[in-house]
Image 1 (spheres, rainbow, N blue to C red):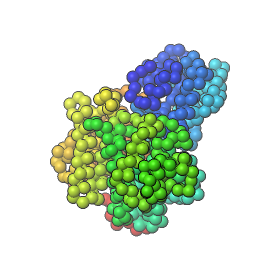
Image 2: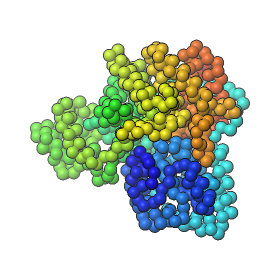
Image 3: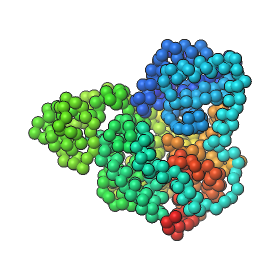
Image 4: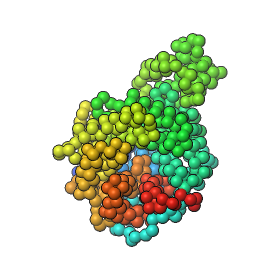
Length: 590
């Protein structure tokens, strides 16, 4: 067993498997003992996936085979981001999809053979037993398969050298959008996706693109989608906040999983929608999400926690549901009104717990009634679990969202949102290491800090400082931004390819190095740095070095952009931001 703050890993450490952390030692031992390696990556977010993992790794046959024949390694998706990137790339190669729960089998010497997302006991038994037979009798075939997979891996998500200069024009952006937007926007395609992930980050990019180029079809899509989300079970009418996934695009069956990152992204797209469409409901939705973060995700004096998710299957849990019977008991004269305002069917069996929804009649529920509904929910508090790690990167993204909200708010509200952003930055600065620059990746409920931050955290913190300075013109934050920009350039910039490395020069790197350029579940570190470079260029009145490095980044990723789908929307946003500077008249339709 080993020390971890991950609630997911803590639970799996109880199952009887002799798990190892992701470090150099188990990889060395695999070579010495001539054993294959098994790596499992996951987190607590999705209840169905989590329960499947618990079932798989508590099965006696799984425990026996992993302990006897493999070197088993387990890690949380947040603990070793570079390893998680490897897993995502491998999964895309093997299964053409991504998942937050990933299994990898590897030969000794960190040579991956297969990656898969299934947590089915029989699937695992079949794959592991076949691999052991091949390892014993046909090892050369596994070596060939591993060699092929490693070559594929080394060519994906990696920028090896500087690409030659080319024209960065609106044509590149239009081609990128055209390559995937039809599939992304198509209603029939959306209905076939299960589970359906909302992806506010992608919606934000499409909105900004559509507004810049006057794309009425896309603007209509964004407007309809955001309204659909707000008036659906995906938006929690009691505590506020959005759920990350639903069974399908109807949003009738949410996964009841809330995380800070997606809610921060929702604030960003809603603030932009309010700015462009001038519809009050978008600001209202953003304000209610912020209320949720303040009341449910803010953890004492540390920052905002990472996840709130169910401890029971969605079909069994009643935490986010209500029955007509309990409403009738607490609201004898108004239970029908309250039930209707929550989107409930008053003709249903009164004993049955119903999924509730945010509706246009929500505001008919008075404050005292809402407090009673919250108290009913809290009686079922054992049905939810929390990941109380305060992540530096996700907190920075939240502070950035507050800065965007400040820009679309009146003076009183504006100052409050800026205060909230400043509070986050101050808490992060209080946890600095080695003076006042080096950051921890996250802090736990007992104030224990874990692991060094990587490029993702530093780039987001720099972005946060720059965004705050743009709104306030506070020189303290501009000076801090310059300090952190210098730190990132010194520790992460790679002159050989013009990109920024995930880990600092003097820190341990995973066996297969990743160049963080793909926007999987979060923005890639390098796309965030591209945004920072443009902001530094703008604030410093045309810093040539920043613009030159930015352009080289775009030259480097351009070959990967077309065909990457929504996995590079962070880069699409930065091409768009660049065009706003360099091609201010390029807002004509494509």
